[in-house]
Image (cartoon, rainbow, N blue to C red):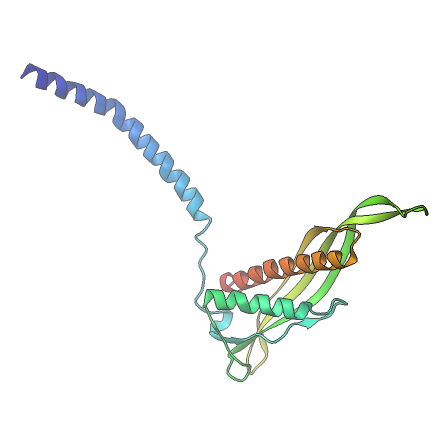
Length: 196
């Protein structure tokens, strides 16, 4: 009997010491989890601004010297809406709204250079790393009134390394353009659903 009383007293004293420590650890853990989770508590709508649920996404307008960018951007934005399933993409005749994209600028600038020996001739300084930068504007207009419901501009850049092979350099540049388009269209999609 005495052993039970001593055991009970030991457990009671241990609980008095351990309980505040356990509560502190629990409170700290809950605080840390709430900090991490609060980042993700952005409310998303189940429709676009202006209550638009059916939208058309025509091919973007390309005001740059780089042909084909309009198809990359249009495909990337459509893919974002297909993935999210927030709205239905339909033809212009069936749409409540239209997302209009304009690629306003593209540039490439050299970042790093190296000196190359041209086999017995003089040497030449060549760029071996570039930064590609693109700007795009997106508007959501209500149909048939053409009232602008939402608009925003987006910009991003990516770096890529080049070699002496011109074909490989073109491929790397196109990969950089695709990465920029993918990122910007994800940003545009998310902004449209969070900004109203």
